[in-house]
Length: 373
Image (cartoon, rainbow, N blue to C red):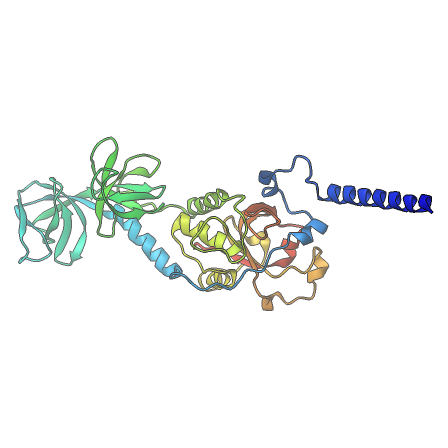
C-alpha cells in the first residue's frame, strides 16, 4: 500500500513540473525582440494578428474649434501676405502719427527721403509703417507723400519659434509663430536676432538661427509647398514611434495616444490644423473639405486612411459588406508604398509603421483623403 501511494505522489510531482515548464516556455519572450523592433515591423497575419487588432476608436467630445479648411487656407494667405510688406521713401515731409487719424498725436515729422517699411493699411487713408528709427506709426496713403521702392525682405518660419517683445530670451513672448508662417524682416538687430512683422499686426523679435527661419530675397511670396507641409506632419508623427496606446487617451497629452488622438496631434503640432477628436469626426471633416478616395492606390503620402471594424484576417471575411454603411473605427496616416503610420492597441506596442497590402487593413479600408487642398 505504501509503495502504491509513493508511486502516485511521484507521478503527480512529475506532471506538475512538466506543466509549469511548458507554461513558462510559452510565455517566454522571443530572443532578440525589442520595443523598437516591435513598433517598426509589419503586423503579422495569423494568431498574433487577431490578438493585436485595434480597439474601436471611442466617441470623444470636441475640446476646441476644429479648423475649417477655408479658414485654414485664408489664414495661410494672411501669413504669406507678410512678405508683401513694401519698402518706401517719403517724397515730401509728412507726419508719422501714433494712430490712423489726424487727431492722433505726432510721433515724428518725417523728412523727404526718409526710408520706411509699409506693413499694411489701417484703412484706405492710412498706412501702418515703421520708420528708419524703428518707430511704428501711421501716415497718409496720399501718393504725394510716399514712393514705393520694392518689396521688403521676407523669411519663412521652418520650426516653431517665439516672437518676443525684445531681442532677448528673457523678454516676454508676444505669440508663437508656427512652421510655414512667412514674416517680413524689418531689421537685423545682431548676429542672433531679427526684428520681424508677422503679417497680422504684430512686430517683434525672433532668433535668426537657420533652425527657425529661412531667409528669402526681397519680394519672395512663394508659400511652403504642400509636400513640405506633409513631410513636417509625418516627421512629427514619427517622433512619437513607440508611444504607448491608450483607449480614449487624453487629447491634451502626448504620453499616450489612441488612433485619432495620434493623427490629431501630428497635424496640430506640425501645421496648427485642429482635426476632430475621434476618427468619425475626422472622416466627416475629409468628406466636407476634401476629395474622398476609396482606392488605396489613389492615396498620397500624408493622406488620412479610415477603416471599419476588424472581422477577420482574410479578404473573404469582408465580402458582401456594404462599406458605405460601415462605421469608422480606426484612422491612420498613409506613408506611401503601402505603409501606414498609426497606433491601435497596447499589444502592438503603440505608435508604429505597418504594411497595409495583403493584411486585414487592406480589407477593412473604407476611404481616405488629404487634409490639405
